[in-house]
Length: 97
Image 1 (cartoon, rainbow, N blue to C red):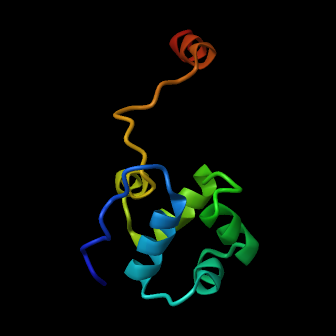
Image 2 (spheres, rainbow, N blue to C red; image 1 turned 90 degrees about the vertical axis):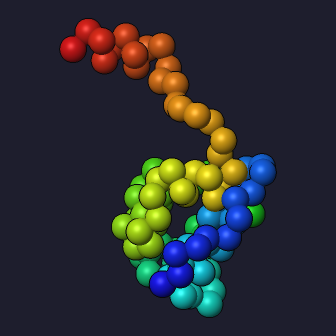
């Protein structure tokens, strides 16, 4: 499997993540990727075209199948945030436990 991944995009684009995963897994189509991840092919299409957000469960499946780190996957999608901020309610609840 190739270690070098396609260059990271400069704006949010989930298609870059899907392309890199297919390249890393040596797959020729989104249909093959869908079968490998055990998801419906329309899900991949909707993510690729920006009609559906990339969910946590999808990212975990993709990580387990491809070995791409979560950080690499975020960068491949164009996510440049340095860190994530929890909502105030979540932070307060976590602090009170």
